[in-house]
Length: 129
Image 1 (cartoon, helix red, strand yellow):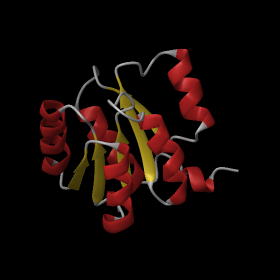
Image 2: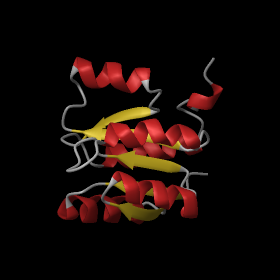
Image 3: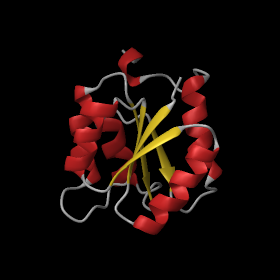
Image 4: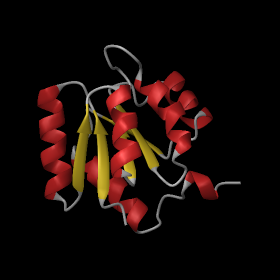
């Protein structure tokens, strides 16, 4: 069950909205605004899913995605306005991201993706050959 979700987002307004949406769907949300904070959260709170903004002020969310390999059971979802750009899709595939969601798409898409992990609809990257 994806009961704990790490939300890595530096925009406080967007983080508040996304937190409300995901927690309203029954998930516990733990927020971080930097890669360093997100790593500390993973070490202490052991989230099941990481929802990662890739455009952060100091280190890129892609840096966190690379670090997330330390927690192979954690599902990683990149959410960005650049979700449909070939470079984003290629990088996500190369880094074995579980899903990419657009910030400009229906906000419930984030919850749908998290729920899909609970129901086994999206394969865990650790199970991929």
